[in-house]
Length: 439
Image (cartoon, rainbow, N blue to C red; front, side, top):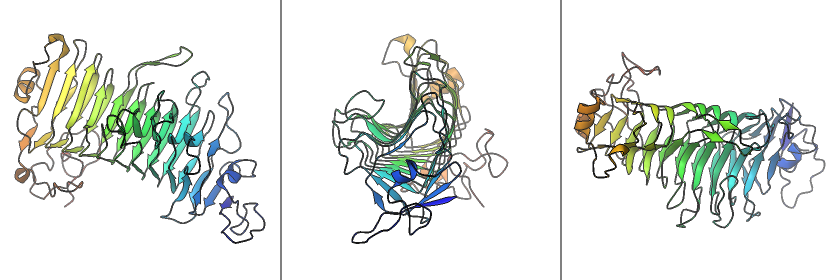
């Protein structure tokens, strides 16, 4: 069944609000969630107005669903947003909360802004099992911005003031975030505040972050466009996104073992596939991985004028990091690895307008911070990047370096110059970079 939400216009007398027709629509979004006849598989069409209300979706403490699950909350006008605005709640840390046992909720055409901590928070209780009891959540065609706007209000799960961001998800399975814009989340004008992120995803599994834009997120000294962190992230795909001008990393992952609040151990996560993304002028680094990161596949991305394109550091048990078919334009790579760590495989990458050494490698076993391996030694001693290229802009055949779209000209040596990484491509082999040449 389809239900309707529409604010009563000013200076208008609205009669009836049972939600069954546009004329008798619910007057708030909360009316459609709480104590209403909306049930599983229903659609709630919401007029593109500004709603100054906090929203809560709850299951029960054992993770069992309630009758309001599997509901789609959608803008009634395609291309326009219904807005959940925190301006009237200046100290409220969260705008929309999804709790233990919530399943099948879809937000389509939503804008979330001006909340003191997180715009959207999805989290299970550390002490309650089953884990991953928040399932099948979709956030689509959204705009999430200017949250974490008060450095004196803590965001959930961060532990210090000045933290928060656009969206926080903890132990959520089958999460899909697509066609969204995350921007200006975090009190970026303030130094010394806690980290703020466009999207902070910890312990997620079987999830996708696709076709989004993350820009201008974070604080002056910390924060990312998107962060996949700890508590066993697994089977996560991050693809066709743009990460631009974020304050620290564009995208960051740290997926080592974790322990829940009740002492339940969770093993290190694996299988994070990051492909066909643009990392553009992030104030820190484009992509970063730390500690016991495993199973990372970084394929067919384009990095342009970040502080470093790729930075991998303090990897005490790092294994299976596969970095192939990437363009690094005016960008370098830095990796620091401990004696127990394994490097993984780097090859078929293109370093453009980058003077050697663009790649520095230091083993912590040397305990000598001045001993840094350059690119040629990296190739010779470790056999890495043996098929990778150094090219000028003119040699590369890239169509533009002034925009975030880096297509290939028909004569580019990067066409069909990659290696098969089991992603779809045009031609006999993948092109190098985020965009396949289409004849």
